[in-house]
Image 1 (cartoon, rainbow, N blue to C red):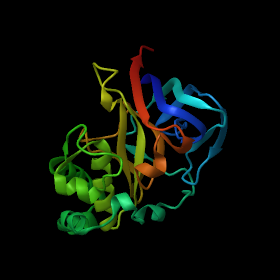
Image 2: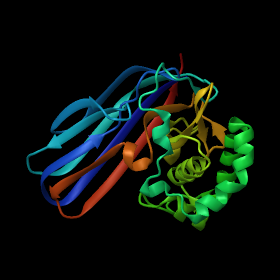
Image 3: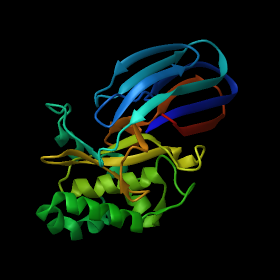
Image 4: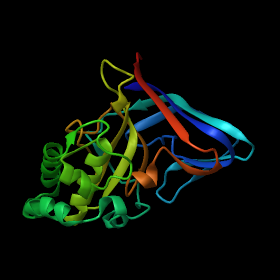
Length: 270
């Protein structure tokens, strides 16, 4: 599937900001599941490209003159492929999948997470792929998708206890529980094409990839209760949202901040 993506992040400040630095993980990479046909990022200030420690393409944006707004636009075309959710290892995995057993503040193995995961331990040990599919189903049932019910600081344990969240929370619960069961699991930020509505809020999306020996990374989209397919475009991976957020940074001055994000994902006839 060929997808056109248009992603605008617009910050406005109540006062003049003197300096802003933003880390942008807004550039997809070509891999077995997708081919980047064209892609560009437009923003004020200076952009410097690099690769982060998780292998993501990243741009560092520095605005070092007075400003009261920053508009960042990422736009391009990606050809996605349905690999049935499997991303085979590209030679020696860097970093090692073992890295993704490490808990983070957002995926701590607190009591609610451990209690949720443990009943699946035997099933996961007998057949990891089957266990992961069952885990995805159970997370979807335990954490109902409810927009605006959480924020970026909500942990897996908190979302599980509340019984509701957004795609980010469902991915954090999946990752936290899978790690309790000894399965390396990474958080994925990206886009999904919502059939019939390219402007739906779920166009900007999050899911998980879990390591299965002999297969590689297998992608589980808990929100849609499927494995990732050609409707998905991967942007970045990391141990949790904070490690691969599309835009994250800091500033000096500026007063109160308002943020508007608009994402459109549309299929293109080939």
